[in-house]
Every structure is written in C-alpha cells, then in structure tokens.
Image (tube, rainbow, N blue to C red; front, side, top):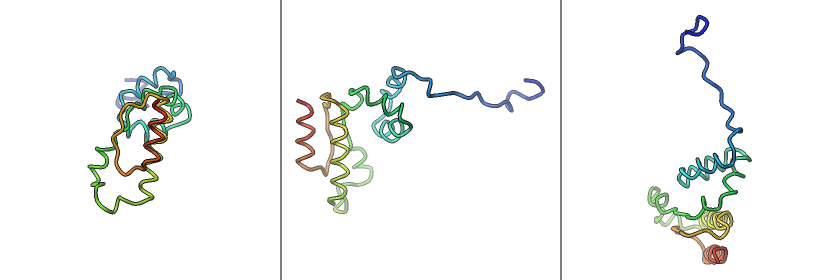
Length: 123
C-alpha cells in the first residue's frame, strides 16, 4: 500500500520515450514487420522517423505479397493507375531509404519505371 492507496490503484509510471537513443530505437525497429515500421515507427514522430532512416538495412526488403493476398489484390479493381502510383511510391521510397542495400522486392502492380529506379539505386 502506498500512502493509503492500494498498489492496483497507484498511478502508472510515466515513461519518456523520447529519451531512447537512436541505437536503441533502431534495435527495436529491427524486430518490426514492414507494416509496423512504416505505419507505426516512421509515423510516430520526427526523431523515430530519423532513427529509422539512419539504418538503411531496415529497408533491405520490400515484400507486399502478403498484403496483396490478404486483400485479394489480383482482382481487376486493383489494377488502376492510382493504385499503381501508390505502389510505385512505396518502391521508390524503399529504394531511396535502403541506400543501395535493397535486396528483395516482392510486389505487384508497379511500373517498369519504378522497377528501373529501384534497380539503379541498388547498383
């Protein structure tokens, strides 16, 4: 009991995640899957985004096949120019962030230009 308050009623300990070093953040990010890295860590705040960008190996692979299969992306309605532009943008961003370390690409619905861009970044 803490000063008349049961332990279960005590306020939870506050943590300041901004105190984590880049090394700690990058190590934690290395355990995330792609979706969590892009939608979570990279979207959280500038310091987390900068930490992820400092480690090109985090972007060595772009595998969108599981996402495509889960939504049935082989269906004709997905084959649109707008969808292709989104996939192209993801591929271009990954190739840029990987800084020459992109080793695996598993995607559908992208343009030849985006593939050429990624290939040129890997040389």
